[in-house]
Image 1: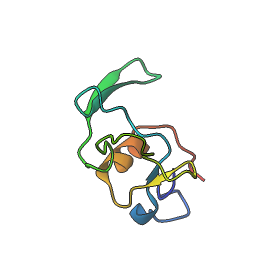
Image 2 (image 1 turned 30 degrees about the horizontal axis):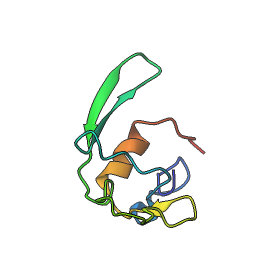
Image 3 (image 1 turned 135 degrees about the horizontal axis):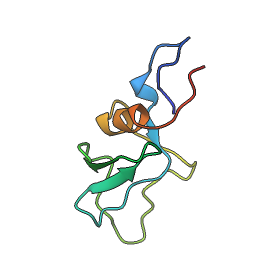
Image 4 (image 1 turned 90 degrees about the vertical axis):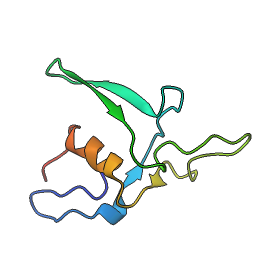
Length: 86
């Protein structure tokens, strides 16, 4: 949850990153189901979240995370996911 604000630190959207890129085969959207038994559909808004696929080209940087500073998609994921409140 790089960049997410906690009880003791301010948020830093410049640190946002994605560990796994979403698939592009659902119209740049996907569904999420949550522990409270509700679900939501999400259409990705930032083109960096679903970059066009190119033959024999890696999307991520090889270090496990792809930087996406300031993207509203990572902010949405962080707001809708479980995260520590340190």
